[in-house]
Amino acid sequence: GNSVTQMEGPVTLSEEAFLTINCTYTATGYPSLFWYVQYPGEGLQLLLKATKADDKGSNKGFEATYRKETTSFHLEKGSVQVSDSAVYFCALSGSGGSNYKLTFGKGTLLTVNP
Amino acid sequence: NAGVMQNPRHLVRRRGQEARLRCSPMKGHSHVYWYRQLPEEGLKFMVYLQKENIIDESGMPKERFSAEFPKEGPSILRIQQVVRGDSAAYFCASSRDRVDPSVEPQHFGDGTRLSIL
Image (cartoon, rainbow over all chains, first blue to last red; front, side, top):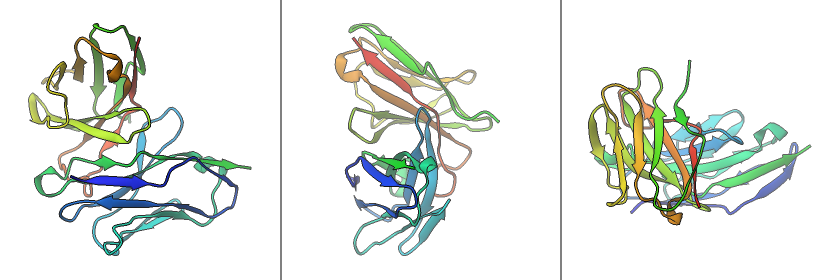
């Protein structure tokens, strides 16, 4: 079945530092890949997505590239802010008729200090 | 423009009681999905419903768990005779008229944190 493995947290950075959160996946077919973010006390929000190999998703300074050869979708940001402190989830969609079925990683807690 | 509304935010039950979790999808959304997040785990798909129909319940435990999405009113996830292992965060998501999340994203609620004493 499908699975997502994310970098273990927590990750603590200083403001303006470079961020990488690793994500690798196992899937049948050609899934779409997603990063979701969960701010304290809130639900998950879609941060960015990529639907096919070599696609780059980007939003709010975050980027991730769909790498089929390494089955990876690492999240990066060049300069983090305190407001980026949250839990980040990597996810993939099911294949074929079950593409609505999202599979999530365990989440990575990011704390950014001023 | 209200998002997906879940209530209660926190629910405490004793072993053997029933838990009812409610989810009102975003306005105009007719597809509802329930996910469960156990401690130290990612979210896991439980069930997908459209109005009055269960489309896919492959992720739901076979016993004690049921879900509905009636013609009127919110979607309900019901857990009968709760046990300690049911303690988790339960998230509801909704989407409009397309189920492919790469085309039509699933919008998530804030979740219900269920604690079993």
